[in-house]
Length: 215
Image 1 (tube, rainbow, N blue to C red):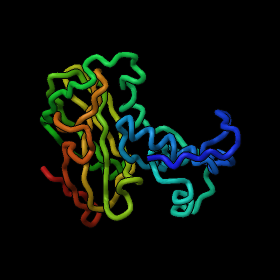
Image 2 (cartoon, helix red, strand yellow):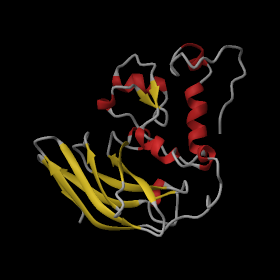
Image 3 (cartoon, rainbow, N blue to C red):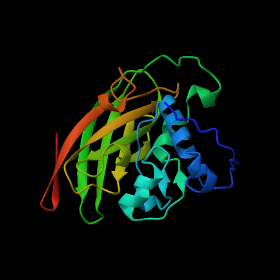
Image 4 (cartoon, helix red, strand yellow):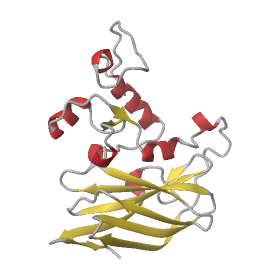
């Protein structure tokens, strides 16, 4: 649902989404809801991107209030781009758009690199479809959920293997979820549903200076 504004003004591709008339018109919110219509979940910003707020993240006033910022920039995250890349709206073909490939994750492993402050997630996808990318969604309580969840992306090899690095780990308790993006435009984490809530999930805990991962 979009609260469509019909106030007069000019939308300009040369102006940031979170400033001036764009902000008054809630243009980011309009495109955000369109993103949901295309299947995108909430995806929060990553600080190391240094690109401002994400399209599928919080509204600008909340973003600036929480981070104490004066930001007007909005960007399309790598995760959202991967999920939209082969979408039939952009691919030009709706053939097989309703076919949801099977998903089976094998050899799932997690390793915390304390020196680099990163978590490496590896595994292998077995499917009857061809996937081009995998999205790792990192939800952690209390400050990295929903609009603030962080995501990471990696390409999937011809053998189905993948390796992702979570470069901004939560240092909290949370869960990793995997979504696979297929050549036919489908996105699924379990082969049965398109929603992130049904994706392949593994929990983790942060204890002291280390992580404990669900096997």
